Length: 585
Image (cartoon, rainbow, N blue to C red; front, side):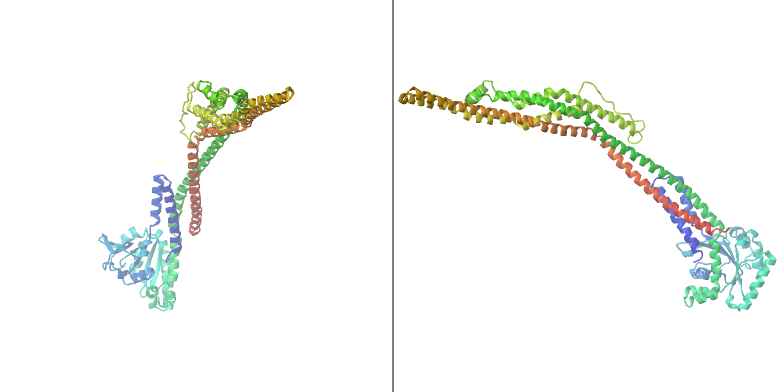
């Protein structure tokens, strides 16, 4: 096809412009740039204009049929009158009268998408149209083809018409010597030599001259029989190469493509600059948000370090509380309790003499000794949370919050805040769970019951000892009685000592449990405090996490668009170079 490389270049430019327009619209670009791109894309579709001039019966229609491989006369729309015919592409065949001497002919022929053909009536038939052709069509023509018949190339009207063409436009003129198959090669050579001499004499210049046989070219394109030989004999190879060169190296068209590329490049560079700036802003925002995330984690650690000394002090207070509770345990495990009947103990309990609960007393002791300290800790935590909030608002303006955003006010009055109340409740709950888990009260009764079982033998031994002593005195005298009495008393002493040992063992077991549980208390409080401190700063993640995810998403989108436009810019550079190579120097 004529001018394939030019049209391929134009098509690639159109594809890149469409891609740029799509990127502009997808990213909400300005309407003016979109309009400019639409106009540039539309201007690329502007067809080449060929004006075909010649006398009647020189074979213009056959020439056009051969040049574009389409039988114009078979379309059924070519008028038989002597009018100027302006052929354009259309979805259906139609003829639209424009003036009494001009018709626009629409035909569904592919080459008419890229070429508009002005087919003039014979130069020797309608003299009045000559002025319209020279004034209206020749100035806009990319090529003016003068068709001469090899049988009579000396028709005066064609040469007279050429004289009316402005000298500036003669550079677009090509001579075609049609019907060359009706002459011998020698005759054709003589004719072409003379035509060249004539043009130099009359116009002071040479015109490209091609001797062709349109009939052979048309047969080659449509019949397909001996195609290459017929095309070679037709002389159309050289003509088509020349026309393709004109299309390919058309300075005005190439300059227009270059201008189109410059305008598109400006829009592309502006878009790319905007996306690069957006990418950097998103990257900066991501960096700031990551710093705030890191600062939040560091603040959690700093707050925990402030609070951890309270655990050491609480552990010391616990040891002191243990000493107080140990006294209660000793009171609950006295010798009197061991020798007292259970019924008597229950009766005392009913009368209001119930022993004090060790669990309750230990919890009270811990609350009394540590309550103020943990209230101070809650104040420290609250202040750190508010301090980080102030830092967040200071660093996050324009990123997390509007530039004119103000931090919410906080009341530092005596009324307990929700954060302090929740923290205090959790600490009390941990202390209560710890004390309940010790089960001190449950450990008292087994030890006391074990001692009571041993102590029951003491009153049971009194009667046997008395009886044994009396029998010994009766039968063996006072010495035997004394021995028996001593043995009985010794046995009773052993029972008493066993009772004391079991009571002491029970007391020691409780004390050991209290001492060993110190690490458990510290672990429970450490876990609870860590959870509360972490949770107090976790609420900021509701602001940071979505903002960070959004910033990362925006950064990826901006980077994708930058890369997309970079690839388009590279393609533009290749197209610019191709336009530069094609442009005549």
